[in-house]
Length: 594
Image (spheres, rainbow, N blue to C red):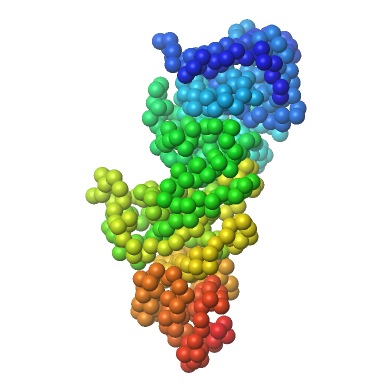
């Protein structure tokens, strides 16, 4: 929307922003009148700052309404116009910070200067007002129900009509907007509004816990409710020291939240980030999204090479790392916004000594992308904490760049995880795909597409492709050997990882029912690992041992190698003869796939 140049005067440097005075009117239908003035965020009276900050969804920019701003016409969206009508008092003026008015939106330089101040703006506000929209589809009634649930310790179950209304309210666009995370994540006092109904943010969160929403809604509302609950523990000035998560963690956690402009998928989270002062993260709307994404990716993965192709929402990240284990037994709690899970550590992890320092049960803040059984714990070179990856055909997607292991009590004061950066044992090539999409329906970590299908412009040398596929085969074989130790509790994890590795027609049930002598297989696999599995010949011995195994392990591991490596894995006459001589219950199946 075009803005008359005389409406805005230049801002003084440093900590200045603009506030609006929303002028009163007894006539509810009278035009909205506002006055714009400069405001110094670094100065406050004895009672602190008295302004309020609005958190809302801009809505459709095509439908606009005119207000009077500094005696001139000014266009705003219908969503903001409705919010201001509900906020306007009949007698007293109201001082507000509203992004669409307080920042000159057609000035990229000013936006780049104001965005670093937004954390301070929302943290110092006397109150942050969350505007969920008008009272359509009984949204106001739903908010009243949540308020009632939040005020009672053991509320009775609500009827289906009320539950349906509440869940519709929780599906409104505000819960998916990326900017709201910072706006409520630093706020000291939050008020939730829908139509004319208004309740305290803490009561709202208590109501959510007591509502026990459907599992499909938890990824949508859990990130926001987690941040809102923190308002109880925030005090004046504390917003400068509460950021504990890196930008990589935040971007991955909230990748499914929506932004109008791609840059905001990063810039909107800087106020919550512990590394927001990095030169690579300074907001600059003059940069292309391609360059912003490249800088962020290189910042998050400092020892990896980063490739981003023009117009792409995907970064291709190549590096080295250690596969340490596999995730299973996941539980999600809305009340404390945590995903709790267990990790089965593999032989690489054991040899590097981490199980001596880490507990087997960890937790991760719930986000828009929930963990899955079979996700992979990996320590990448250049990072001091492990990452969580998800196998996807012949590469990995990034679930989160950083997960913090639960450290055993005697090691709680250790600053760095030990050992990994000093050993080449188990070190392998890792190719990651990190996707940051503009809208939630474009984010998909589930699709088992091959690398060439999602990044046709990514070109590898032959030896790079061979090494990558060999390492994928290793992960699948390793997963079978380690996860099967869990017996029945590991079945979902193993099913998932084999499915994502595109290993077909596998019945894994027998792995969890039989006791097998796996010494020969383990020795062959370990020898392949010592050889860095850079060439297919490293798997020849594993295949030779696998086809002789009379139990299910031999069949499944030979299937993984043959399906994953295909013609690159030579099958000798001796291997065929050994398979033909296998009289075990899986001998015929092994022979058939050869």
